[in-house]
Image (cartoon, rainbow, N blue to C red; front, side):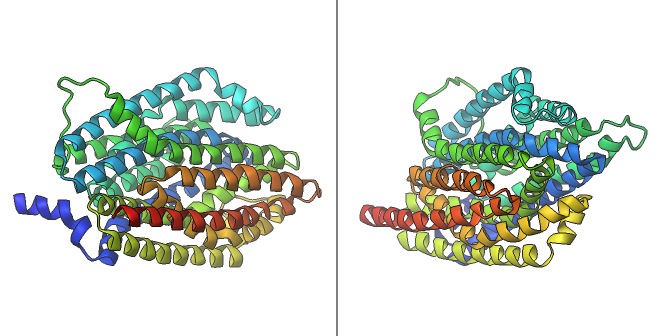
Length: 453
C-alpha cells in the first residue's frame, strides 16, 4: 500500500513527460468534451422554446460565467498550493490548504446567494427592454444563482483530485453531471414522464441538479479514493495566511474570467443594438466554441499540476518539456476547430433551430471568429504556465488587454460601420495582441525560474 501511494505521489516528477501529460489530461479532455456536449444540447432544447428564450440565456451568460470564474479561480489557487506542498512532501500543509479552500468557497457561494435575491432583475433590465426576454432571464438566472453551491463544491472537490494526480475521477464526476443535465433537460423543459412543463426554469433546474449530483460524487471520491488529503474540521479556524495564498494565486484567474463576463456583457450591448438575433448568434457561438476550447482547458488542467509540482521539486527540464508538448497539443486541437467552423457553419447553426435571419448573421460570424483559434491555443497554455509558476499577474494583464482594452473598443468601432458582420473581426484583432504579450511574458517567467534553479 505504501509503495503504491509513493508511486502515485511521485509520478509527476518521474514519469516520462509526454505520457504523464496525456495520462493527466486525457480524462479531463474527455470530461470537458462531455461538458461541452451538455452546453450545446442545453441551448438546443432552449432554442426549441423560441428565439427569445435562447437570447435570454445568452444575456444571462455573463453572470453564469462569473460564478464559474470564482469557483475555478479559487480552485486554481488550491490546486497550485496543493501541488507544491505535495512536491515538497508537506502533508500538514496539504490538509490545511484543502480545508481552508472549502471554507473560502462557501463564503463565495454566499455572495451569489445574495445576488440571486437582489440583483438578477436589475441585471436583465440593464441589457434589454423586451419583456419576454427579461422574464425568461429572471427565472433562469435566479435558479442558477440560488443553487450554485453545487457548482462551487463540484469545482473545488475536482481541483483536489486534479492536484493529487487523480484526474480519472474528475472525468467521471464531470461526465456524470453533464449526462444527468442532458437527460433532465427535455424532461423538465417540456414536461415529459408526467412532470409539469417548466420551460426555461426546467433548463435551469436540470443544470443545478446535475451540478449538485457531481459535487456529491466528487466529495465521495475524495473521501474514498484520495489518501493524500485528510479532511478534518477538528479545531478548525480560518487561517488568513493560507486563504491569502489561495487568493493571491486564484484572484488573477478569477479576474481573467470576470473580465470575460464584462466583455460578454459589453458585446451583448453592442450586438443588441443591431437585433436580439445577433445576441442569440453570439450565445450560440459560445456554446459551439466550447467543443474546441474545452479540450484545451482539459489539457491545461492536466498541465498545471505537472508544472507546479516540478517547480516545487526544482526539475526545470521537465517544466520545459511539459510546456512544449502542451503547446503542440493545444494548437493541434485548435486547428481542427478552425476547419470545422470554416467548412460547416450552416449545419452547426441549424442545430439551434436557426431562422434565415439568424443564419445570415451566424455563418459569417463563425467563420470570422474562428480565425483566432490557433493563436488562442498558445495564449491559453502560456498564461497558465505563468500562473503555475507564480506569475499570475501576467495572465491578468494579457486578459485585460485582450478583452477590455482591445476587443471591446475594436468591436464598438467596427459596429459604427452599421454592418454586424464587421463586429466579429474584433476577435482575431484582440487575439493577435494577446499572443504577442504571451510570448514576452512566458520568456520572462521562464528566465526567472532558471535563475532560481
